[in-house]
Length: 290
Image (cartoon, rainbow, N blue to C red; front, side):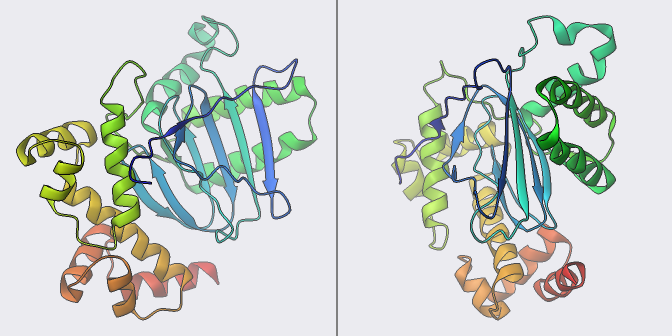
């Protein structure tokens, strides 16, 4: 696990198709939970449920479903698993030039062209956009291939006009296949993923990738726009959010299960991260679910 790097996923549309469309439900789950990347743009709608996002250097927790647009070669984990309790998951994957090298350069498609540029960092949509576009994506199941193509263009155009979104990685975090540094950052990410419940010192993590502590700190900040301590703490806080939503644990138990060894520090960090203390967060989540 420590030496795992994002897996390159080869996506091949069915014969006669320029894009891939998949619909998953409780009887047919999306099992691709590995940390992976691919050159295709990926649009994912999760209908209901809650879970963890890890897209590039961004980590967060979503509730009541999700709508995410992931740029090409941006490493990510699947948004759903057996515990997410979502009703369904719809996934569309297409190469940026799936309709030809210059298609999106047409003046009528300027909105989509802008969207494809900013999605390199990953975009999370919310509000009425999430609901409206989610419904349109689910209707694809009943359309012909030609109708799906037109619907996808319409969906991308509406997403490009929406103001209800957050960019997850402002500077982007795409894998550059010619850059040897990719192995290093992915060793770090996977090490955090496996060991976040324990204290991870700067000496330990720097040594893991054969760097001095100062060099490692500069490298990590330049790559992720976050300090290592900030990133690892955010990972723990997202895990805490997940436990508060899904497990019947006391807040003290959530604190220690998330890798914090100081309850006061946990409460303060959680409030800084979410705007609420753990009790307020859990109570509001219960209200939303009800």
